[in-house]
Length: 199
Image (cartoon, rainbow, N blue to C red):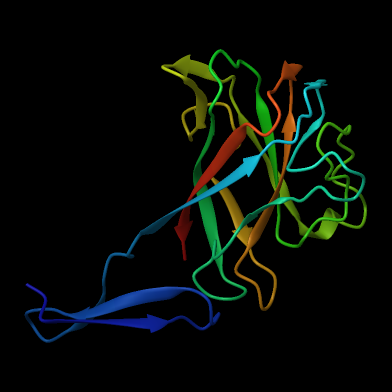
């Protein structure tokens, strides 16, 4: 039986471990605490009635330079902190969608092409140092009126994915790319969700 638990920061200044005093008065390491955070970002895809070709960006605007990345706020517990993406999901309000989605993850706001319906050109050399990797969301499928898909460690998806946020930041940035041709209705929403095990 443990009588006391103390959570303390490790020498790296980022990760935490818990120590506890056991029934014999000894100070021992406790099992690591697991903190899973779910972050969902919803974006109305501009589409503008146009079909997306394989390799096109999925974002809020097809106006030149007006497209935005998907921003996952507070992905890390502390500024400059780390974690692992252990699950990723895509969910859209339109049924019968079957395209796959690539989620390119960055630790800094990307400078690459971000406009909806434009051909993806990322990662580029300027963003390379901040590019974590790419998560592959499998083909969407329909149940009811939505289309959705989930990437987990047991699917092809490049998960779990470890990241370390930039100094002073707790955020992650995602460039979403359709891997297959698809047609979207203008302003339909697309949810991208990350499940993150925070250090």
